[in-house]
Every structure is written in structure tokens, then in C-alpha cells.
Image (cartoon, rainbow, N blue to C red):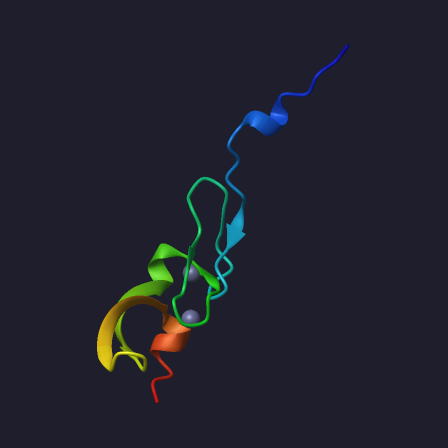
Length: 71
Ligand SMILES: [Zn+2]
Ligand SMILES: [Zn+2]
């Protein structure tokens, strides 16, 4: 009888930054709070985002694409 033990290991899924196409499988992926796309550390910045629900500005992590297109 053979049994497979591969599934019991915690796997980190590889991700690609949507800004620079940087790929990593060793670190945890992070996503932009506005567009929810995976972004690397370099292209993710803390920013104040207006929350329409409570009328307050909240700190979010925003990619440079969203950060550079402020309305
Ligand atoms: Zn990047
Ligand atoms: Zn974004």
C-alpha cells in the first residue's frame, strides 16, 4: 500500500506582482486593498483611503497603480 503525504505539508503558493511581474514562492502574497491584485513589497504603500461607510480615512495598503490615480 502506498500513501501520499504531500498534501499534509503547508504549501505557499507562488505569486506574481501585477506591477512589475516579480515572482516569489517563498514569501506570503500581499494584495492591494483597492484593486485586490497581488503586489510585491516594493509596490505596496500605506495610504489613507476614504471609507464611505463611516466617513473616515483609514490606513490601507495600496499599490502604486491605485496610488497614482487619485481622483
Ligand atoms: Zn512589484
Ligand atoms: Zn491597487
